[in-house]
Image (cartoon, rainbow, N blue to C red; front, side):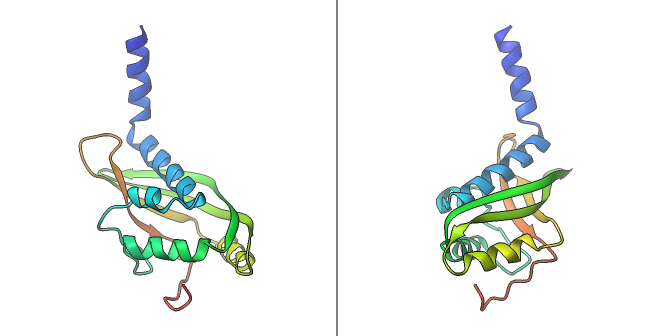
Length: 149
């Protein structure tokens, strides 16, 4: 009986849609905690985004921008998952809050005023149901200048 219950729980946990949702939530928690090694573990080596960032540059930008905060919260509103195996997309309106230095209020205002949802693009890397990596991020309403960050 215990083995059957465990099997059902694992089958539900390892569903592709659930894995994309969980990976997205866990990535946001790593960023919120400013755990850059942990956030980097979620990203594929060939990560690319709409702003020309690769994995290393994205992590550098996040470090630079988020060091303005002494506390940070990231909230995802109405998350949606779309699957097109072996890829999956998670989208939600992202809101941030927190306290910090002189740039924190500007960053909060800019992110919270975005009109389009943020999309995280994931790819399943192997036969393992939990082996998903972030391959890109997009948000057509977010403009980032290379000189600003």
